[in-house]
Length: 243
Image 1 (tube, rainbow, N blue to C red):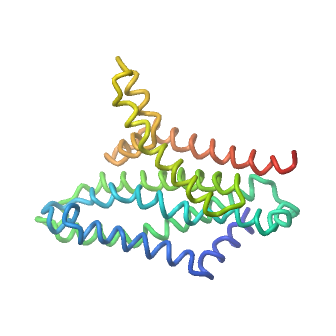
Image 2 (cartoon, rainbow, N blue to C red):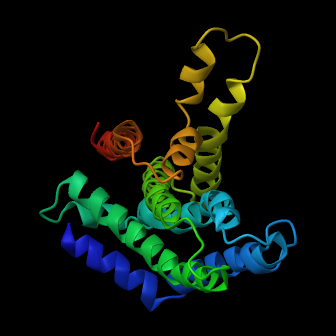
């Protein structure tokens, strides 16, 4: 797994892929935080990073599939997947190597945003007038969210040879799992507590829950289960070439 991880990390940063992904993420989040009047902290007047944490999931929906789309689709298209599987590595090791490489790239993208927290913390009146617990919880939520999106992106890349198809499929799956269940729960066909159960099936519900600063084991289990499920489906997709 480590050999795959090193290979993917080197690929990200020896080309423009990693730098472009990180640069676009920081540019978009910077615009949300400081420029756009609807979400700018300077216009809002409160020491909060809510705008950043509301926008980040939607930016991730585009950037993470853009990073993961080549993971298996390109290997299948060029035929290098056959060379890869001849190495003394299991399919799961290959998947996890690519998963952690993409996840580490996301961490690199998030690290500079800690400057947002420092800046807002200093701008507060008095200094430090910011909900540090809520911010910490939101960052943890973003990491879980990123892990889920990476797993979804790898699955989408494993079932097609076309990178564009993999990208579109991953975006649709991420958006559906993040938004659709919350919207479905609003339909009048659900009654009693059924609407809550439907809402809790979506990523958005659990991300919002963690973002409040309270780490609930149910939210952690949900994200880990979702990641495990898509990793397992990716493994089945890769194994299907042997059938």
